[in-house]
Image (cartoon, rainbow, N blue to C red; front, side):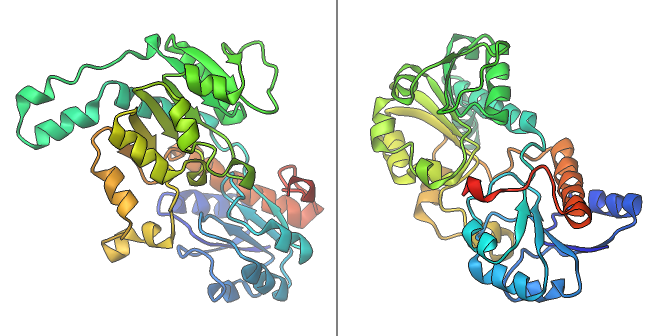
Length: 333
């Protein structure tokens, strides 16, 4: 069985090599993300495996269909960048990895929260400027004294709830379809109440159209003065212009942004071009009370191996049995 994989990161390569040796399948590995042009490399392959946050378009699926390939898996959770309607219309079936390591992302959300509560960015900025005295003046807050609002109580959200509660925080949760789990130390409330009561708001919802800019100027205005916003979910959840205004005015105390609204191929290729021309990105980067990271919340050894192994195993299941448990079904569109 021959499989082609696109967008392979350096840290994925050892796990891909190990998987190939363990299973005996032929795995053709490319570090370049998939494009209409380079999908021609998939000729003669049985299935395609992808990792990318840039769009997977109708034109790309048309190219895949012309090659006679009917099964695609992605090494990540989100499908908001994928033209699922086109895939369905062209008879291409797709599966994701819905849970490669919820704990990795939840831990990162807690890490970002602690970094901002203790004002480490502000202290570091003062040290970088040579002002030792000023660096000692940024008084922090303790997580155990906070009310943390977790928006989205899916796999990742539930892990975040457990971790925040373990620190002693009071935890509120909002989810339109709450999972009843007696082990979760949280109270479910509606979104406006969560925003109004929380000193930390942590996002863990999908980037579907219905959630676009769920944190806009009105939502930010509901939040308490000095509250923190953490987004390790999807960039489109937050209105970046409104976020910047709330930070500049001082209404928002800080933000941890791992998924940026204007994430694009140019940003992902920052290492190649040496620059990314985006005034909002530059503004956020310059704020010492903002932790801006490059979509790395998931990035642990455990998560990377699971992303590789699970997605390739799902593709083999697709190809050998015609089904896999994580298929993204038409009803999810």
